[in-house]
Image (tube, rainbow, N blue to C red; front, side):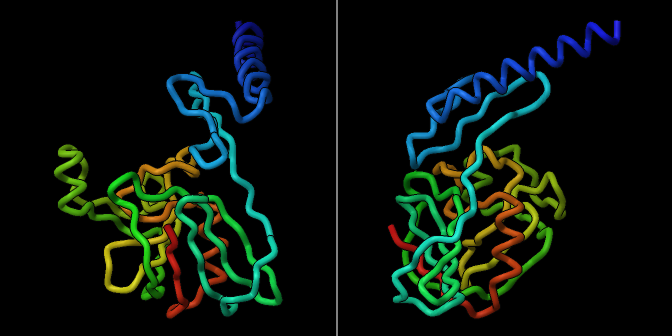
Length: 198
């Protein structure tokens, strides 16, 4: 009996991995394919969600910005942390959905580990059954870390839905995988400049 269940689970996992190995053009269970800027692929299985990742990499940076500057390229759905000496760390991000995206210059005014979340009135109007407050933790939509931007309600934060990275689904905040936001959090100082480009 246990052997049959183990074999069945192995078949499901193998089928998902073979399908996933077909590349980023996969769209399963009603999800979108990654078109280079869209959400990463994902497959919903009885065992959970299997999804692609946008890798964190060091890239060339033209050198126009001081080390420690954060540059968000909304259309590209990437965040760059300027390292200096012509290099930047590039991360995949999720951005604001249509009508919620924004651009401009701000600064990191606060940093929080496992932040609490209180939805804005706009989110409550859009999702009436949303909890009015959530303590920090793995189920919290802000994820493992948050960088607060100026006196706005916007943040760069983690997520409990990492398969949405690369998409445009937030209320205007910038989402990152928890691993990536922890890396960025550790690199970023209070007062760092954040440039959000369209």
